[in-house]
Each structure stands twice: as C-alpha cells, then as structure tokens.
Image 1 (tube, rainbow, N blue to C red):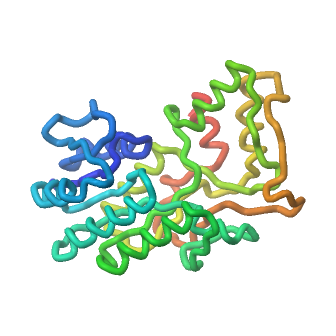
Image 2 (image 1 turned 30 degrees about the vertical axis):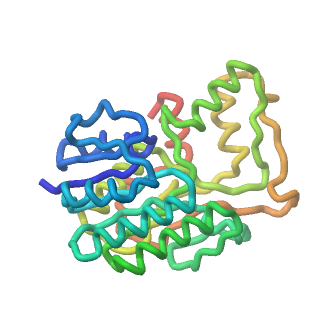
Length: 274
C-alpha cells in the first residue's frame, strides 16, 4: 500500500482527500487543527516555519506521494517548499502541488490552458508561480501541478458565507462581468486520485467544464434559497463593462468525463440535489 503524506490535511481540500483516499492508501497528514479522521500516530502538527520538523516527518515516513495543499504566509511557504523539494530530491517520491487560477491574474482577457505561460499581478498569484517553479526546478517531472479554481463544498467558507448572509440579511458582493469556473472539494479529490493512480504527468487545469459569470452562479443558488434577490450587490470587475475571464480550461483529454462536472452539477450538490 502506497504511503501518502497530505500537507495541510485539516483544510477543506485536505479533508476531502482523506475521505477519498483513506481506504486504499496508507495516509499521513499534517494539521493546524487536530484531525479526527486519522489515527494519532499518522498525524503531525506542523507550521510552515518548522523546516526541521518537516525534514523529520518526511525522513520517518518516507512517503511515496506528497500532496501539498498547505496554507500560510507566502515567504515562509516558499522556504517550506524549497526545503521539501531538497528533502525529496534523491528519492522517488512524487509531489502533487495544488496551485490556482491566480497564476493568470495578470491577464483577464481570456481563459487559460495548461500550455499558457503564467502571468500574475497579485502577490498571491506571483507566490504560487514561484512555488511551482521551485518544485519543478528540483523535482522535474516528479512534481505535478494541479491548478484549481474556486473550491466549493458543504463545509466551505464560500457556502457558509451564503448561509450566514441569508441568515443575517447581509448583502453579498458579486461581479456581473467576471466569467469563472468552479469545482467541488469531493470531485477534486476524485480527480486527484485518478491522476495519482494513473501516474499522469505535467500540469492539470481542473474545474467545471463550462463557464459562468460570478453573478449568475450566485443567482442560481440564491433563487433556490430565498425570494430576496436584493441580497446580491452587483458591480463590474476592474470597473469595465468588458467581459473579464478568471477561469481555467484544459487541453488535456486524459481525465474521464465521469470525473468532470458542470456548474449546475456543483449547484445541485450544494443544494442537496446531487
């Protein structure tokens, strides 16, 4: 049974990965809040500045696979992943690094595929680009870059924001001209499992197969939950009437359609119909 170490296992994505992988892999995880889904001897409290502890964990476990869905201060994360790459350099360990649409937030003129060169304006986007490059430089093909859009789940902060806003009658800011795609935590876990089991290489853009405006996505949810449409406050992204794109599309054909979804699939799941 292959050993998988999930860095950031107590987060939304990490929790979904544990649920998906726990029966068929020997799982270990690091956490900021203790995990109820893993035995005590297979979970480790780890902060991004604890590089010596990271080295000890990877040395003692000797994982076949590392999945990084870690969060934390950007500069410390860069040092963390530089140390991770060095620790694994002379092993056969494969690393799956979760990145983001934000690596393209310097160009909102179109959707972006795996072959596009990242261009970012935000600190977050530039940090993610640097992290991708650090890992690729040291680990080459043993690092797989998993770029993802907004992640939704029944325990996600985005879904909780909608419920709290409805409860407190608080407006939700949405963009009428920003075209996006989205993804569910549980489906991301299934997609990543497929990528791992098939040992696929390279960069992956995961997300709903169709695109939708930010505002319309929220509209379709809100209209099922309340008659108060005024809870959505619309504005134009980047103060322009032009359509702006914050979306990932894939030019790969190795992810089966059974592991893909539409935005309507995501909405139906959140509303309990999926």
